[in-house]
Length: 496
Ligand code: PFF
Image 1 (cartoon, rainbow, N blue to C red):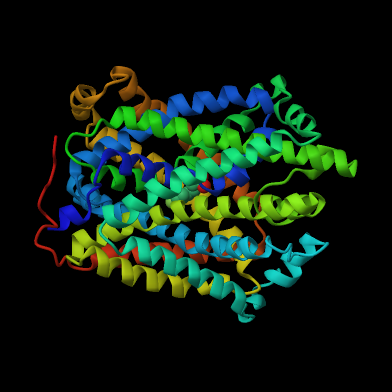
Image 2: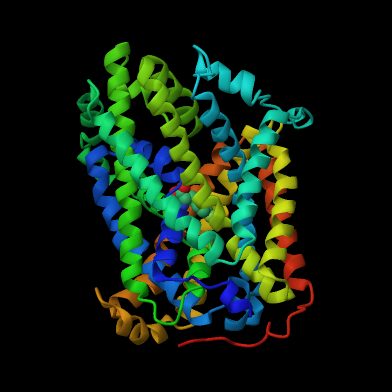
């Protein structure tokens, strides 16, 4: 009975949910800046290499194994080799940690959706964000200063997530993705179409795409391209694995991979056009060079953009709400995916229903997320994000390559994947990539990231990184050691 509660109603639901997971804040507030600061037009070379060498081959691998096992990540990894059950829990736990801080960002953005109707951030948006809204303490004593408005906004997000996720997969996530993801694309097209008509748009765009070919010989931009693709496509996070395990028996996984990778890149390049046209407009109005206006992350969304909407006059009242709503939808469709790997793994091991597991996890998540509704929340979020993205998840990609390509023997999947594929066929080149090139390359990127984090961390950051690592590891050990309750936990559901 559990299978149908965890099965997509159609291939379209799978594709849209997967695009929803991939298209998120990384595409809107991260990619435009990464493109700009890593060689502009020249960045497309490492970017395309990263897509061909990593995005597509790795997604096919995660999908193939997930489809084959038709079960959760933890259960499949344990089936491949029971010694690895720890790893089977480690990644879903990391992704759940992402969910908890994504809820905070969603909460901030939710507040801005409302503020944008009356430009409630006032004449100085930067001071409004840091001093009035998040009341940044820059000191861990701020953990004792609770911010009720942020807590309420976050709880609203958790309630929306619960309403969707506790239902059967197709009735909740499947249906919602089929509505929200197309809506997200439509609003984005409208915003970008309008931005391109603004005076000064071409100034921003020529800054953005102006190629710096010399940077091609700098390892940094290759690392940036691979890092962006891992984050943007949510690779190695056990999400793609889980979504593929929910598919019906006749899915064409290779063609789906191509569609999802294409849609994700289309969206982020579109976002870059919009962001830089608007920055060009801003530059023309203020006389400040584009280079001094560009930022990423919260700086772009909660500081630079509100300034633009202030300058835009009446139009700001239309564009503002549309922009913050786009971010909300992008964040929502991503956060919905972050609960699936852990939830499905728990359902499989402990025999709990989907609905009950989701309810329990969401209550735990909402409770833990309150740490971000404090004056130290934004700093803490940065630390946890650095640990998860730069250290834990890249490591996850390497581990998945080893377990899936080497121990599981990915070769087993080739004939079956090709027999379904209406587009490209995979062969020896795929095996060489997933067995050798990818793990080695990602390991190098991973070391680079770890060294950078160690070199640039403050004492607070180091302490909180260690604390996050301990919490993740303790949760992993508990989930691994707890005895299974479901009689199916040791049963194999392999399809191929
Ligand atoms: N891929 C999403 C983005 O580009 O914003 C981010 C993301 C979603 C990261 C889900 C991690 C995750 F588990």
